[in-house]
Image 1 (tube, rainbow, N blue to C red):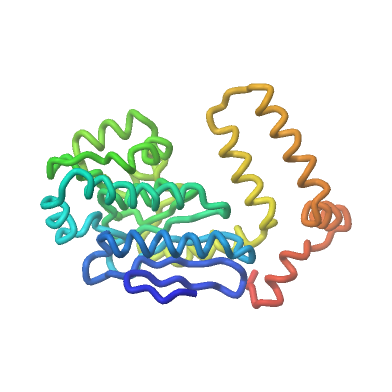
Image 2 (cartoon, one colour; image 1 turned 30 degrees about the vertical axis):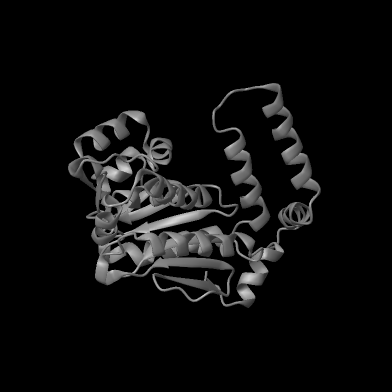
Length: 272
């Protein structure tokens, strides 16, 4: 895997990747280099067919303080077209993460401000500490959470987004769980244990079935029951039933044994 200046990308032998934000001295704040490296790292994860899922994490005390101050100072001196290019790059990052074929789980500690909420919202699931601090802080400095707004709305709904985007109030992990940004929150001392629980649980599942389910949920997300959606869903279950993993899963269930993807994990030292 590529060596990065602002990130670490680790591949676990059990078949999942952990992408670490790695600028702890800057509280993992975004700059142009980190955004570009995140795009490259996600493309690598996407192309690795042996991966089951992705963890998005951060080194140090904070998940991410949002945009880097030095980068923002540079942006203030740029013209419209150059700023548009920067916005396009950030959008490329968010859309790449949101459209990732394999499941993604964000793990949050400390501060998660501004664009960091975009990263969390683009992941399929997120957990964090009770005392984590979240903030859509853009209006405090005369900006707007423009690029990340579609993803934040999808994660927490328009009403909550209006409140936090317009007030720039801080809220903690307990509130983030309450409004749906986090699936689960826990005391900081319990975070690693809870991450391992989530990893173990995801490793029980068919890698192909998780990818197919993610595609399926994206297709039916708006809830409109059209004939095209019905055909898509019917075709999806028919295709996966006759696929090698679908056949293996059904046979294993009927024969009361572990499916092959769990056997592979056992060979690689998975603890149960």
